[in-house]
Length: 254
Length: 311
Image (tube, rainbow over all chains, first blue to last red; front, side, top):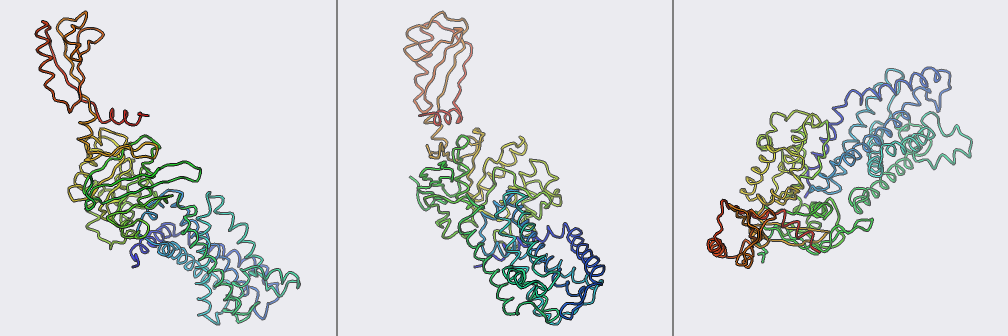
């Protein structure tokens, strides 16, 4: 028996929060993407050589979309579950006949939906600045979806772990942002000295961006299979942590 | 004793120790009968809210079992929880949500299909219909309290927990709320409430449970409790003050007030009251005239205090 109405209630409530703040939600990715393209795509990028046969402006499109997708997924999902904890309204979810899986589908589903909408908007915005093509649209959507789900789950975990608004920001700012910048958003890791190339392979974001970029231009730093495997692994790790959180009631129940 | 078939909530050997070592509940046993209004009384920190929160799934018990209509709250959590409505003590609200959205949310969360006419009925019953499109933050405290009740009723619970429902609520709302509670009881809903206003429990409850320091001290029919524990007092106002009490009267247990203008007789409510007739005969025999008579009955509050203070 699945509490379908329960999932829908959580999802709808979360999406309602998105629609209430629609303008900010849309404006921020559109503005930030535009800024990146003005600075890196046009101003600096015009003086740079193309990478792997792709013009620099177009080269950074997948990386920028990933950057946006990661930060938005984490912030939406972490905020989504942190707020009811902070306000105390979580009592209702805890006392309702909904299973862990249903709660996660509701919250993470809504965060994923929102970040996918924003990623689509950013892709549209990029059209105004550079020409890019998508050679493998199905794979592109697959990576987009897997990444959005994985990082929404990751955000959900942060939202449960955090016990202050400051902590809510710490992981995205201190870990995710650096990993994304160093994970090949703005360069190909083959441009790095051999030692740093090896170091970079420990950065999980490299695999996300590499696989995503391959779906656009057919070129990648690491093979598609490795990218996909790493993405799925990250998803799995997040699922295991979420299962543990609910099993133990960590930060949710006394 | 309680007929098991009539017990809708059954708590056995329930204990809760918090991480800090504080023992909030200590092997509590409790049965609540189907369709009754059960008042759980106790001083602050006695374990009332912990007990409610364990039954509702918000707090995890350290030991013990709870079943709701025969369904174990952890094994059959869906069936158990879908029968329960909870109105928590604090006003937990998401300020930007509208009244109707938050009530519809509660209904869906508990697995029921949307039913706008049912939600409308609940909002009308609670005088919230005019406010249905207002965001929660625009409501007064009393209105927010009504919304909390509407949320709990939105999924048609068979057991309703009201944790301090009338704390900080004005007289009008309190009266509305009690009318609502009686109406629910008439429809077969079991009500379990905690309150600080003991006169409310006195007025509303069918049975009373008293909890102190994590232990249930007593569970009893309210009327029987009042009878058993209650004291009545007869005060006789005298026409002329007496300097001292005649021996015949002090033998009967009467005392003279300090000012000497009234006699006081204290007796158990359940005791046969023929003693009073004897007192009046003695008064006449001693030539004592009296102007007025009053009798008072001790309130549940006094009974409660005497039970909780007892060592």
